[in-house]
Image (cartoon, rainbow, N blue to C red; front, side):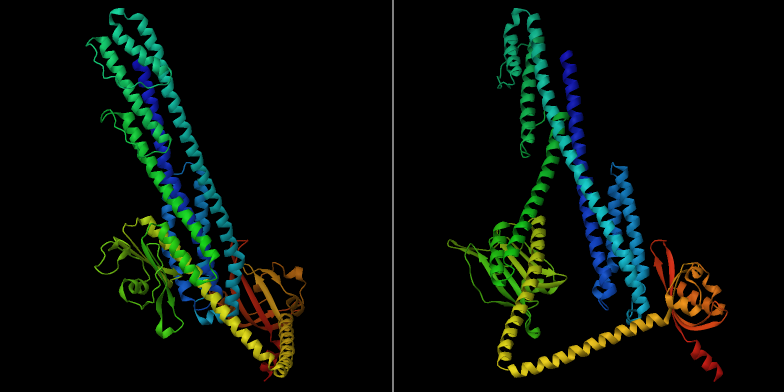
Length: 628
């Protein structure tokens, strides 16, 4: 009875330990790993948003980036937000949940500012030409949006590191649980030895056979040895039943111990047969093995992809100055790395826009280089179709006579064909075509697509470098010609010096004009209640008020015409700029007529709106008009 109690307690403890480890594994697989991935995606989305909103402000008619920013806010961000909200609901750390909610709140606020201050105001050519609108958009970008997004990225990076730390702690806890389970199994063996010794002293010598057998078994267990199967037959009495039970226990412990040892060594392919369908411990061990195997396979694939990306990144870095060498090296290594049998790399030749085509830059077949002169036009065959559609083509049903993999022993059709465009920013720089006797897994296809994007980036840079080299060579030829025309160059230098002097005079004139504008125009900064926050020196001089007296004064107390001010307020609250004439009261009671331009912008410190008014003093012109 004592043995049964001990075994039951051990079984319960083992089951609880295994289930606890299973919970940790599921949490890593279903919560932490997806959370890290989605947080990284959100961090990347913030980076893209920074780039796209900056392009919106400074690059007019960049419709593609504007559409991307609009799609990012309307489609990508809401989907990613819902996924992260669902994942964060399962986080154990309430503080992290609060940080995630704060990040979403901050992100929503940033997008609101982007939409109201930039995307809504900078739509047409006239908006970009309106200096006030452009100024307010640039102010919102530099003082609000970019600092907020940088702060948001720091929070995301901190949260990602916290989740990675959680995963590491969970892994350590899992290892400790397995160690404890092993120690418990050893302790059970020791207990069996003690109990067997006590029983041996009590049992009569008439049943010495089974007792001796059990003694030997217990003795071996006490030394940490799992006996071999004896296949002995025992009597049908209680002692025989006990011996049979002990024999089964040894077999079960041996099988369980071996299986647990394989799991501990990372051998997740080891087979294990539970004692029955109701064998809770055995079935739990199998479930744990399957979960660990799934995690190990995913880690292996990630490590394979990470190692490959690093390896090919180094190849691209070392060969980015020569497209020919780059093509040969990258294709040879890629074919070997993914286990393909044949491959070709095509590069787009668009030197003549009317005759754009793909040229085979490198090919690889059975470790033998075959130089082929081949041109492919858009839509020609599978390669041309992949170029035309800018999408990956993966086939396992290969048409006859499409391609054959040859060797010294003969030739055969491949099992699969993978064609991946070398695409960057929706522009195709070339294609990769790989043939293999094997099929490609999804993660391998995804890896080749990532490598293709890196190759496209390098090809883009290499093409720019080649163009730069050609320009340098042209420049050197031009230098040689210029040396033969020294007198003409001297004259050109004199003309250039005269032009430079003229430019300096022009710049000086522009600077003087800017100083004149600043010294002759009045400037007001008002809060959302139209109270004065700040004025410039020209305003103080023209109106005759000391600066301290104008501070926080209601602007409408300076305006003679309330209707004109109300009209300006309505236009500004609707998001428009306003241009018109206002009559202001001076300190001495006189009237100052100004031609004003006003606009509304956001005060990031007070979280309210503020108004900017620039005005030119036209009092003398207005008086002359009245007299006339």
